[in-house]
Length: 229
Image 1: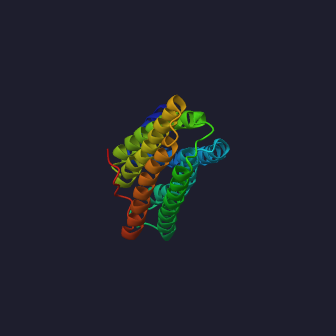
Image 2: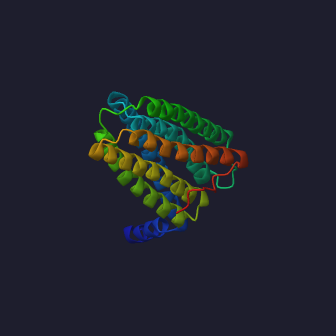
Image 3: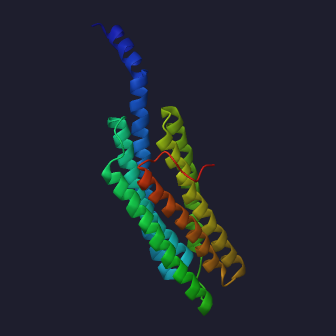
């Protein structure tokens, strides 16, 4: 076949719906990987600095990031399943990941709740919330981009699960905003109880995420999310 004809054929194949879908699923897979790696790094740094600065909100934010890693692995497997076997139902691995995620959020909520009560009784004040400001600001930028990118890919694929994942990523964005506000208020005013109040805000979102993960596991479906924008 002559070079000109070969190039024309390649362009047509590259522009075919099958090739476009393949590229979009590859993008969805890469976005899942980015989510996992980012949350892993964020979790390690947030927990270390939260412990060092004695800020419950930042430490809890870090624990949440680790739970999001488990959730992200389940999402990654979901993308692979839909990509390779569009008609295949949710796997037991994904259901287990959802259940572990849900249980993890409930334990986080209980731990943060106990920490909030103790801190309020003792009037505990963090050493500093500077790193809470820095980490939450970076997280807000990252999560905003991830939501936009996931929605863009999901809409082009006409995939409800991918779009639902994007909507649920909004919870991470909301939690980052809560951390930013509480950290800023403490740095500006030194208000002793704002760190505990910020942690209480994280509890609300953690319970919501835990319930949602368990509901998805029960229904064996990713196509729902209570975090729609």
